[in-house]
Length: 196
Image (cartoon, one colour):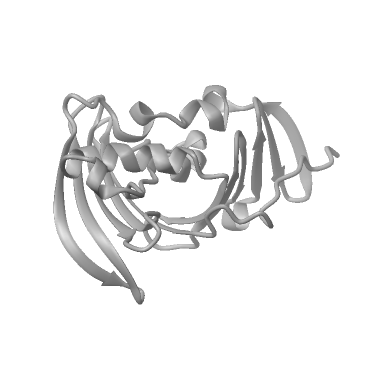
């Protein structure tokens, strides 16, 4: 749902969805997905692996409220803490302002789903994915960008297992596959690196 750029390293934080803990409290698929975003936003931590075609996946860790670590394969690492970004390339670390207000700025219903008025969601039934019982959703929106996503959400926990996102930005189509794990894992810690 975010165009690939330097800020795309935060994409996993922007694209994750989960299923509401109490499905009976919501009316339909759209309401379930909106409630799922609220549950995701309340997660204390998670790990995500994002791939956009051939090549190594981008590994991301998040710790609430505003810490993100992104391993960009052979390109290096990025750590965002609050409004500060640390970039480590070839053993050298530089410190600069985080793009777009940092990780916390991307964590809202609207950032994740787009315009709620134009949001369309359909339930695609139950499916087992990598041995996990899941519920599957199709999520489409036309505002602010045309996006189409499919989410597999763990039936037992309500957290996402995988998402495939297709977005059209600037006349180009981008597809990303995300795999999620380690929700609320206290062993995920993100600290500022030493600046050399």
